[in-house]
Image (cartoon, protein in one colour):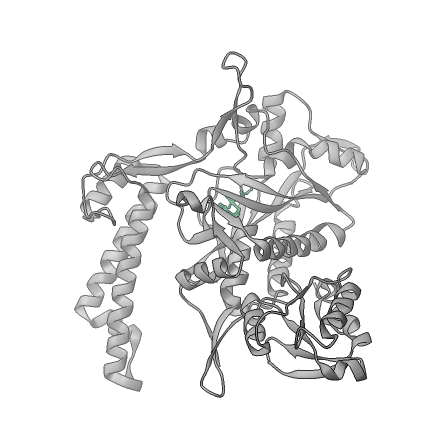
Length: 513
Ligand code: GAP
């Protein structure tokens, strides 16, 4: 029986133990919300990137790639609105000097009420058995009713204050709800104020000639400023897209939940340029295409949902998130936005340069509208990893930890295990490794007893183990063990490459998109 490992704690520790993710600068006690990817992590990340890139760029004649610099001219961020508006509501606790997102504290308060409601309901469900009517209980039990009212009122007030950008109302709400510092219990809060999330730095060493720069908070702006460069040199017509994978930086006030919210992270973005008036049509099409791409990874349809935005950002006329069921609940994995011509129009204005597209059919110049899809690579990594990590109770009652990564994403696609370190078996293993290594990520593993090696490869996420035993010398065959079923089958060495290719190559997955 397979169980999802629900706790984030076990995911963090497994990711470290198996060389996926390490805390950054760990020997100095780490750096908050910054992580390093180890030998397996970098390979998993690279495979995710490749799968995304192939689906976006390689499969679409009208999508081009780009790798823009992280540093951009500082005016970029005025034009994009980030200097004025890319901020979160911040509150400090005067006693502990700890900083929090004001809305984060209120959301935690709401989540605590949710937990109380769920706790009361599940206790009642046990008491009443199969006759239990949860909706009726929520409507009639006085304590549960009160919790629900408190929760909904707090949420309403928070949303209202955020929509009006009323920082005083947020300060008052935190005081009225009696919210305390989660670490110390102190209620000695400052007023809520705005905190810009961009990291600043300087271009030159000398303060006289220095210019204030920002580390980009999104990759998108590199695409907008290069829109005409790519369009003209690639001779693209509308609609066409520019795809990019790259680092982004945000000085998140409270970065929690492992690699879900980081200060340095990677985005995989597409900006799709379309004719004015066609934005919403392409927006709907991209919502559907992106969901199909996610589902093709086989992590389970029930773990995804769309959440359309009620309140739109100033630049968007439609926006939706693809949410994923992370170990801490459904949260945003990817954002899909119809951004109108907001960005190109502002860059035209601030740079005083024409960024219009010449449409040869309409014989007219105009600014295209943009549909954007933006997924966090690290978040996607966490989604894949958290679903894949499972504890199983085997038929003999023993436990097995298995990382059921989609085979196309697994860092090691097959481990080659000589049964013993003698009798010519290591030589056969090495020869097979030499044959397979050009097409597959394969590893040799000859340490420990074979059973322990299987367990180690299961936990590391390796979908296939190839065991070289004494019979191999006679029959030129090996045993292939499947990570998920643990079933073993004998196969001629010459057929292994074709077997792996049929199960591991991205081609079959891409063809189904
Ligand atoms: N260009 C649009 C844009 O940046 P966003 O919703 O702010 O939109 C897009 O970010 C995606 O980037 C999110 O859906 C999320 O997956 C990822 N992301 C954003 N902030 C992040 C953070 N601090 N750590 C990790 N991933 C993040």
